[in-house]
Image 1 (cartoon, rainbow, N blue to C red):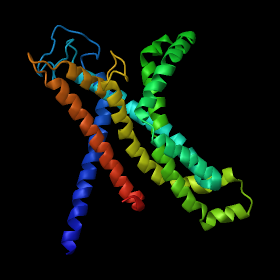
Image 2: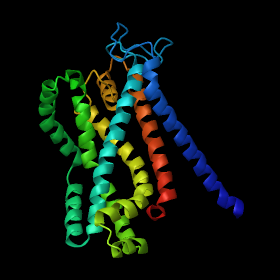
Image 3: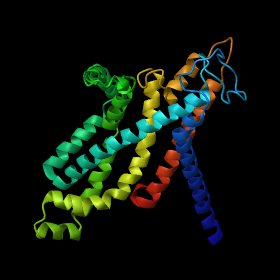
Length: 297
């Protein structure tokens, strides 16, 4: 009986270690891989739709660009959007949930009803509307500030903001429920008795106890943001060419499919990279949730 009880834990640990190693590997190759490649991501050649070979390990796209280099650059942008979008959702969700939980009463009900309302809205459509409304003003502002070098990245900046603004709802709910529990704790009541301000209680007595659960849901928010960015880019509403993300590479692969020639490498490698990235992030997030948030099992 004892031996049977230990086997599932060992398998789970091995999978978690594999997910952590996979994520570390993907991050390293995304950061340093394009620097080591002999091709640039935008370099066009006459080798259009070349199969994987020793010169091009993952083949080339319809413009003769090296797919491996573009895949590494695309993974870098997808990771950037994922981490910055999750950071925006962390700041908004944690602040909103902490204020709602600590205020309680009518303020809490009003704020959480607003969260429920936002849950009912199609979030990706909100991101599309936000990009449509803000892209032109942002480009004009960058030109006015003489930051034209950043113009190709204006859509990426809006993705940071837009995806962060729609991914904070779950974080707010989780933080709010934990604050409600902490607010009834003896050490918080003692701080109230001695006259500490609400801001001081939140900062010094409640927020430090939220770090674990916030870290867990942050790891689960990153793959959600990466998946949303890939979907928007696949539709042509995210990262703009010639920049690449995993979503734009999948879109390029879908456009290259035709009855005359099947460029399978344009779909297999970006799709595999996206699936591998999402699996490693979700596996780590689930394990952290089991360790730090037993109530979420």
